[in-house]
Amino acid sequence: MTKITAIIPTLNEEIHIEEAIKSVSFADEIIIIDSFSTDNTVTLSEKYNVKIIKRKFDDFSSQKNFAIEQAKHPWIYILDADERVTLAVEKEILEAVKNPNECVGFYVRRTFYFCDKRVDYSGFQRDKVIRLFLKDHCRYSGHVHEKITTTGKLGFFKNKIDHFSYRNYDHYISKMNHYAAIRAKELHKRGDKVNIYHVMIKPSARFFIHYFIRLGFLDGFAGFLVAKTQAYGVLTRYIKLWLLNRKIN
Image 1 (cartoon, rainbow, N blue to C red):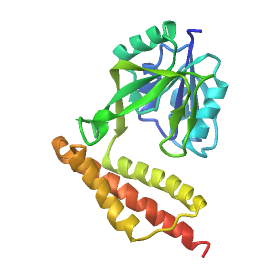
Image 2 (cartoon, rainbow, N blue to C red):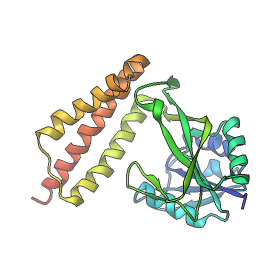
Image 3 (tube, rainbow, N blue to C red):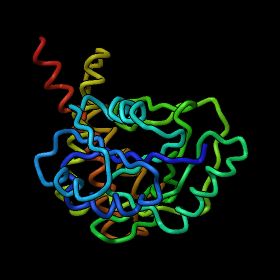
Image 4 (spheres, helix red, strand yellow):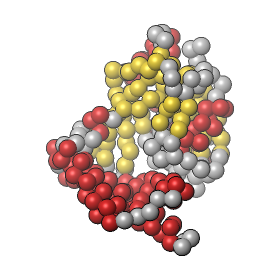
C-alpha cells in the first residue's frame, strides 16, 4: 500500500517537463497524460522511464480522472508541469504513504512565482491543493478550477512545493484566455446571460480583491499585474459568453 503513481498532465510544456519529471523521480510509476502537444513535450518525456498517454482534452477533471484510472498503484501524486516537489515535501510524501494516520489525502501549500519573481501575497499566501491521495477515495470535479472530492480524512504537509505558474506575461494572458473560454462554455450551457454587472462591476471587484484585500500591493508591480490580469480574465469570460449567446440568437 505504499507505492505511488505520479501523474503529470501536459499540453506544450517543453520548458517545464524535464524538471517536473525529475522532481517526482521518487514515484514508482510516472504517467504523462498529454493533450496532443505540438511542441517537444512528448519527445523530451520519452528520455525518461515514464508512461505516456495521449488523450484529447475536454476538461481538467476528466483528464486527471482518466489518468488516475490508468495508475497501477494506490497512492496518486498529481503534479502540474509547472510545479516542483521540493526535497522537504518529498520526505513528507514518503512518510505519509507509510503512515497516513487514516488520511486518504494530503494538502500541500505552494510558493508562487511570477516571471521568476516570488509572489508572497496577491491571494497566493493561502494557496493550497490536494496533491497526494488514495485513488479509491478521491476524484476530481469541476471543469476549470478542478477540486478533489472525498469523504475521507485529509492531512496537511508542513512544507511547500514551488509553483512556476506563469513564465512571462504573455503566458499568463494565454492561460487566462484558456480558463475564460472553458468557463464561458459552462455558463452558456447553463443558460446564463450577460449584463452590465458582469462586464463593469465583477472585473473591478476582482482587481480590488487581489490588489487590496489580498495585499497584492505588497508584491510591488508583480502584484499589480496579477490583480490586473485576474480582472482581465473575468471580463474575457463574459465577453466570450456574450459571443456564444449571440450565435444562437
